[in-house]
Image (tube, rainbow, N blue to C red; front, top):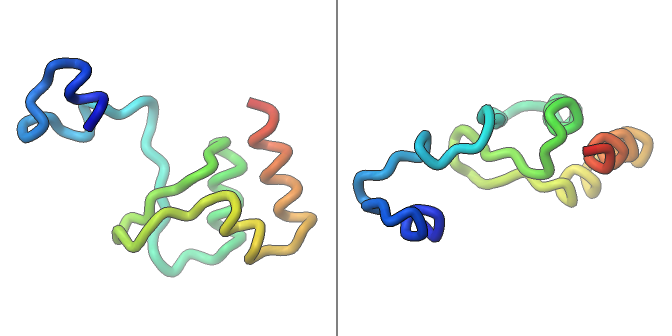
Length: 81
């Protein structure tokens, strides 16, 4: 919303595509934790929107749910931006 107003655009008429930066990354409900971790690592993103709009997968969520060695790879990928 801030971005829309700062650009003096109409919030009702502005689409998400107009505000997007880069290519969209997401996950589908039901994907395994390791698949989500791979997507986050490969694309160097800290959050993935859920395609079914159930929420957002954050780096901390992955860290709590998966083994430390796998999470270490994600942290390394994110740190090398």
